[in-house]
Amino acid sequence: MTVIVTDAGFGPDTWTAGFEDAAALDLTSDADPAALTDSIGAVQIIRIDFPSFADGRGFTLARQLRLMGYQGRLRAKGHVLADQYAMARRTGFDEVEISDDLAARQPQEQWLARAQWKAHNYQARLRGSAAAN
Image (cartoon, rainbow, N blue to C red):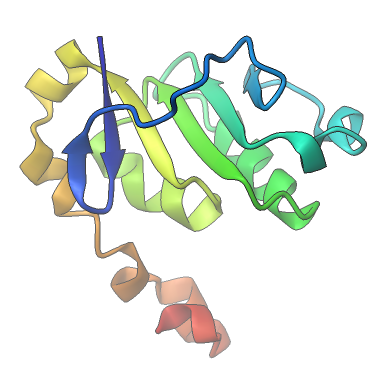
């Protein structure tokens, strides 16, 4: 089973269709976002795999998809740690999908401690950006 992490904490998976559906897309962390230019408009949810907590390519991919105009649901899946939650949200992810084992090792309180990610965006504050608010 899996646990979905949002700014509200742990919850169930509310995506009702399967990832075999045309409205959903599973990507590896090394996917080429340019290859998706024509298809992302029809996709409702994209799930990007994190094979290791040390592999940050998924963050870059998420940011690139958002810059390309993707407005659907974006989910990080796999080995994402609570310490990486704020980065996941800043790069464009809406939620994180983790295993029950990881949820047991890193309980909801650790994720919620990073849920105020907008309040701690020092880069946006330095740029004077509205994203800091």
